[in-house]
Length: 383
Image 1 (cartoon, rainbow, N blue to C red):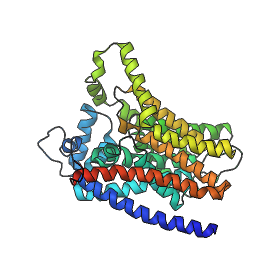
Image 2 (image 1 turned 90 degrees about the vertical axis):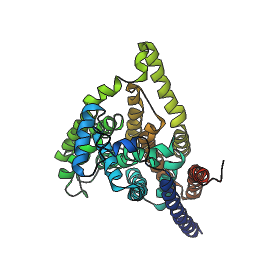
Image 3 (image 1 turned 30 degrees about the vertical axis):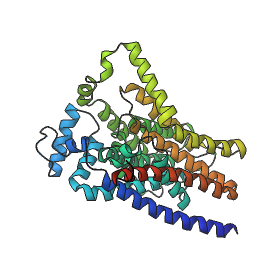
Image 4 (image 1 turned 60 degrees about the vertical axis):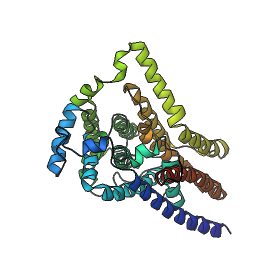
């Protein structure tokens, strides 16, 4: 009976995933290139000249780093997708969204189909601004695309951290062929992502290295290389001359220091109690069931992911503006912990699979409601 129920869940999950892909693609087709998309489709220094080659993108990002901001990698990705055109960009966006859901499952060490469905459902259903962080082209490049890189970088280090502190780990880098070479660009891109996630994931990798030193385990060269290049990327995104040009135009410059501190404290509070609250609520329920009722340990990897989420949220205090879409990376770190704890709960109590799947179904329905409402307005069904 248990095996039959599991097969039924997998069958229904497969159908719902197909519906999700179709709805996301149709939604992407109805969200046009707009706002920043239109500017980044030019060479930036001259808004009358559209980008036509990789050389134009390189020149644009050099100008961007010097005159507007340090997120050269994410905006370089944006310009590549804009160069591809709307139809191909929409296909790429759906593919990257699915890839991100899978990478979250890998990070959580929960690679089953229901976990993949849950990851996708939470990305849509718990998102503070699903449209601007996932379906707006500039938002897709700044968040889902670059979060894939960030989580892949984090996974490389989390694999080297014994989860309970006592068990052994595989030989460093085992199963990751050529990591000494590709960890360099991966670390650089992860650090050079955005102002809050880059430094947070650099600290995550540094903590793993320090744990290995403290426990007298070997620290391979690739771990040091990846950490150093992630630090370099974080420095590049923060110290870009364009950041100082842009910050000079920040609206809170007209206020005094105490009022600016109040406004930034308000922004942090709003992020926790508004933007991230649905995700924190689901996380709290899963932790309460797992740790509170079943006495399941969070594990060091989940604690480190939570610490990284805390850093990425807290780092936004240094920013004069905390838009809701900027909570996307922090949300993804929390989703990884939710998926990980769900896997531990199901291993301990197999009868919990159906209730947990039911929760993910409710979250999926919320995400589909967002997309469905948007499409209904576009088609004139809602006025």
